[in-house]
Length: 356
Image (tube, rainbow, N blue to C red; front, top):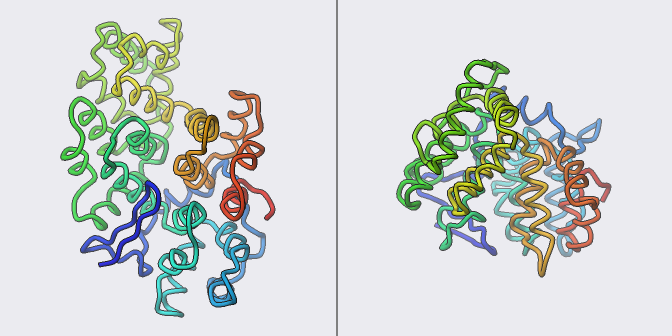
């Protein structure tokens, strides 16, 4: 078996994992709709070459005198998930080698990580990110928020695809790995969130919103966020219902629910609850905060910056860009350009819609 690791991200082949050789985890029609009807910044040309033509250009970029990084960025960085899947499959068929393996062999550093994460099927990418978070030595908010993002800031169909990919790649379920590596009370919340399958239609019951706003308020006042009823609400109600409940909470009790959660304390449990609420209610705020925190201060948290841009480029980076400006009074694109360089910068910027 082969494996590689870079920075805080590692890739390993489990006994049943074959995706590095071109295998894809199929997206449902609902998931493909989620990735195309969005506010993402990915820019796909009006006329797209065939997968075979893209593969030919990629092969030439790899086989020339040194790697033509710009060609790789311009090809993969302007293809949506379905098109990237076709490229991976065609590349394997034409050249009998994995595109992921070839990218890993040709590139290095943060650019390699960004390119590989982008080249993966979205469900496999998130399954690998979840596994990396659970395998990390330290399992604080910085690591565990990845699981909350996958469970609460993506569609129910995507979460199901991630769970299926996780089982195939690592020979166990995501829930099992959480149960075996995370202690209570975080385990209870995370298992509840990742094991949910929410109704994805816009169905809201105002009576339920009022009742469950009261239940959440009672739990916060009692400083008992780990009540089963609270986790049940967050992990089973559809996102539209939960947003109505959060709005009802604010109307009845004066504060947004995420602000009131601080009354319960400042442990990891309260922090994960706040992240879950942000990811459900306004994911663009959460990811704007992730990007800003990755950039501000000494050094750059490239892992978080890469994850946020790569995972949201087909979903809502336009909204994240707007929210970033509102929250931090700076332009997201300018801050990313100012804190990155070279091919890594170009990879992130093309996903943000820039010309490279």
